[in-house]
Amino acid sequence: MKKIILLIMLSLATLNADYRVPVKLPSITFPIAVDKDFRVMQRNCQWCHSYGYILNQGKQSKEYWNKIVVRMRDVFKAPITKKDEKTVTEYLFKHYGVK
Ligand code: HEC
Image 1 (cartoon, rainbow, N blue to C red):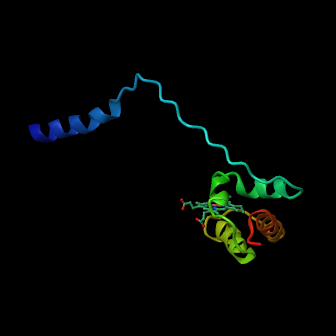
Image 2: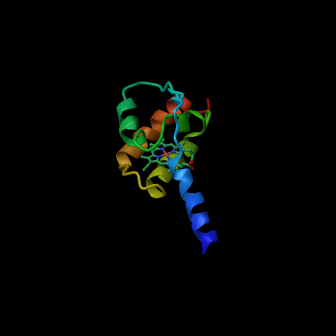
């Protein structure tokens, strides 16, 4: 019984970790291309993760970008319309497509 009480106390002790040293988190910004379709992409792609996810893919084919947009909708349930799917795919390929 004493062992169980001791274990419970030890596991709860970590909840009381006290940080007195201020922690400065790095702020990372990802420069993204801005054109007439930027706002459509922003409306559809900005609210779950940073643009880093897009930029880290490197230059890709149109098919690749379309699969990504469709994946965001079908797998992660982003409410992307058919019209926006086309516009965002074009935008991604225009700026981050293979030549
Ligand atoms: C509903 C939330 C949501 C929205 C909106 C969203 N994504 Fe994602 N995205 C995710 C999740 C979740 C992952 C997977 C994260 C992981 O694996 O760590 C992801 C991953 C990615 C990746 C990395 C490759 C991959 O397939 O895992 C890319 C590129 C990407 N998203 C691009 C986009 C683009 C472009 C849009 C706009 C069309 C978009 N995302 C909108 C949720 C979203």
